[in-house]
Length: 104
Image 1 (cartoon, one colour):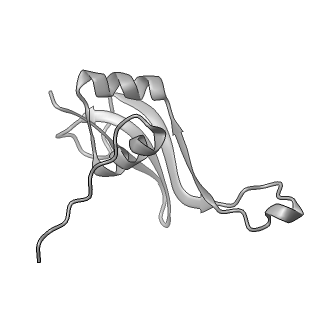
Image 2: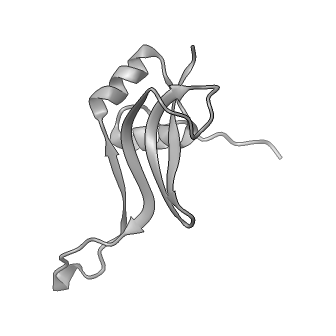
């Protein structure tokens, strides 16, 4: 049984929202996962309660991740998909993938 950590899409059209899930590799994106370990909202949000000096604050994307469960599933052998690999590397759970360059 090969396990993958991947994104499951929810939300409306033009308003995506993703759950970070652990599921079998051959199951479809919308099927019931083994466990939901986090959420990811890719639509940038502006910080609220800004003061005059912080009016140019950068928007951010919301990521909520249960780090302990993510470490457990990585330790068991679950393979993250490429988008999830990037999110886990930002959280400091895995190393960044080296850039791959193709010869032209």
